[in-house]
Image 1 (cartoon, helix red, strand yellow):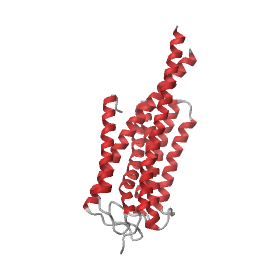
Image 2 (tube, one colour):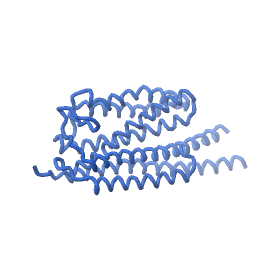
Image 3 (cartoon, chains in turn brown, yellow):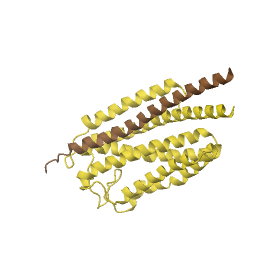
Length: 51
Length: 233
């Protein structure tokens, strides 16, 4: 029996297996960036409030 | 979780290297399976993703018990992060399984006991995240989430044993498959080694993601705390 050509399915499988966690971690990067901006702003406001 | 930046960075590097090694083993070490061809290589990460997805929900179950016992918010953070990561792994397992099924079963999806229980389990944990979103009070949210994480865990052993309890076309990786199983294959030694190495690697990836996610959650809580303090001042 000949081995079937399922190379494209393999490519699609690995695109999903690497793509999903990549997008997930990328969303963290954006979230962290926004949180750091918020923290900086809040610290400035806190300092203003003190003075 | 990991407190020092250095330990977390080391874990990130080790995880990256392990992932690289596992990918190398899948494509360079494991032989080509003759009946299914190249798509069989999806199997190694598919099994690892599905397995670690279930393990992540087990962690949520355990930390849920710990939270109810101690009331320490740290356990809640870990439980929340574990569900989120577990769902990513579960979707990876389902999607890669579906892609493998197309040439192996001649369909992307079938109403098989494993696929149904797996989907129901995923939906139960999606509801966990929705429940958290709906509760404002942090203590109440943590308590409800812990209880939900414990009760929801019942879906995990049902999913795991579904291919052993019911007649299914999904192959059993550990132990013999049933008569109805389609797409199963005899694993050679390099295949087995690659699968085991992938499972270990994905477990380390999970630990790494969990540590980073908990760190992000701590930052988010710091921001929320500071916001509340400024508003009350």
